[in-house]
Amino acid sequence: SKPFRQLTIENKLRKFLFPSTLKEEELIIEEEEAIIEEYSTELLMEMIGGDQAQLATLLNTFINQGKSNVANMKQALLDKNWDQLQTQAHTIKTSFKYLNLFQSAALCEKLEQFASTKKENPEMHSLSKKIDLAFVETIKQIQNDIEWEKSEIKNYILFNHYLCFFCI
Image (cartoon, rainbow, N blue to C red; front, top):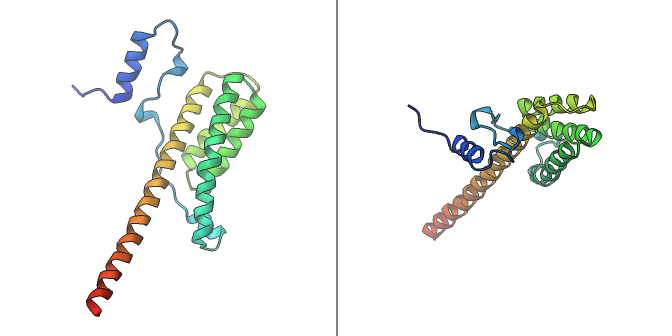
């Protein structure tokens, strides 16, 4: 038999420890349910003419604004503020599209459509969690890429420094 995934164990413990207080939508989504896409800056680079500094600013904005947008989306869902939920889902969808994250954008589109009905739908909570996980995963990818870039620049500088040392 397969070993349990961490999220499966967490869900089982939550159900066991807090059976009467836990709502189904509060369970952590299983890893296999989360959509994990690899982002691409191709579209953004085309729009900004290949300007690396502007790309860095846009990625920073995606991270900072995105955190706020996702938090607002989750709060709007809890408050049943359908107009705000629709607005936040639309905003996040657009951000995902700029990074070629079309599966994640489709989740936002679906949530946006549910919110437009002005009625609660059980699927909304699952969609919100998946969008949140997709956003967090994208942030991790961006941060890993930034760290890799920094290490490559550092290695380049060190290599050239030592190369110049031997040239003297």
